[in-house]
Image (cartoon, rainbow, N blue to C red):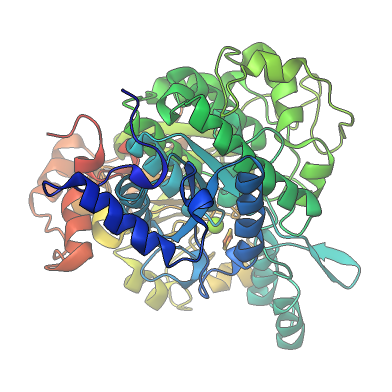
Length: 564
Ligand code: FES
Ligand code: MG
């Protein structure tokens, strides 16, 4: 017996199945759709418009385009809303709500009658949330991204959110850009619909979705406002209908091999540190775990090929014009697993046999002439981070790669904002700035790891310092910054034991981050450690109780497949 399709799927049955079917159909008739259309298989469209999500401003156009693709291929499109996460509008941090969106999306895919789903996301946390949901929901699914913003112009120079936001703000803090100019720049950074214009978290996750095989080939980098993005949406709708006849589920696509390919691409992009957490969480939903040693091996073998901000010069519009993910995959071909399949059921080998019409080697370098011979991100370990930490070497200052310095400690986010610009702060350029209590338990893991250079040092011309925390940093940020220290301070990790004046040693060559304090003394200090108070109600209490540390992707324990 074949399982019911379309509106008959997942019908709740209280004993009279025909009545349940009659009831559902009579309600469906109130949509004004013809009985003919209502009898077709259904493609759900998980849409995420929100007044608080500027990156998804063009969602209605994308939903229309997916819908016409679905209709043209002979199925019925049914769009439904889920939680939407606009990066800069969420307090205390969007990271806290990724899992909420993943739960919402998974449950709505499963609870409503659909035979396949197209998920439309874009802003940083939305694509990982949708991919996590798709793996757990088990229904054929296609990821469509909203696409990157186009750049603005300021005095003849291109500007893109949000690496240039940081660059200009740094100059303003240092006094080289005045109040009038910064106010002008404010209106020239984010000028179209779409996600941040650089290789930040959103663009990195879009490229990862395509590499995994969950998006149609060639679609990750199409600018949000380009007509080709609407064509990609239409094609995604058609492809979803084909998936109903020939079902391929996300766990057939997201395998150890495709996850390793995605980590390779992440390295070659010089992509966002956040993508490590998200890809770990997505893979974790499929029961796949890539150990830190493997991550470092992949990084050491994979060159950075893509010359985009924040690591290099270009913007996502250049990456698109240069050949996008397809060009990167072709350069990485000898390093990739080629038997992985995508949502069209094609192997990566088959995809890469097709020629690309144009590649711009200035933006996507050939493997023989990389931006850097080794990958953009590495994991560190050591007495300060026994379970690991992440370091974006591609966006750091090589002169600081081997540093031993004095710790200047901030106890939490409030302490940081209160004292960082204090003219009396005892700090020099060779110190190591340490932020505690900004990890998943303490604060939901905000992007606070990009600690500002203390104002008095910035004004003296200091551009970079070693900074260490259990927080994340924006994918659009740069600097010699050690992130995701695990266990976090609030969970009693050694980070909690650091005191002003302690010595900290960073060695990128050895992939280590160490607190140069006697082990017994660290233990003694930690014995007195008191974690911050727990939230007592609602989602925040659930989050605090269930969230895992960064090396496990900050997913909820009960959503992971080996959960009890
Ligand atoms: Fe949405 Fe950057 S704020 S992608
Ligand atoms: Mg971001």
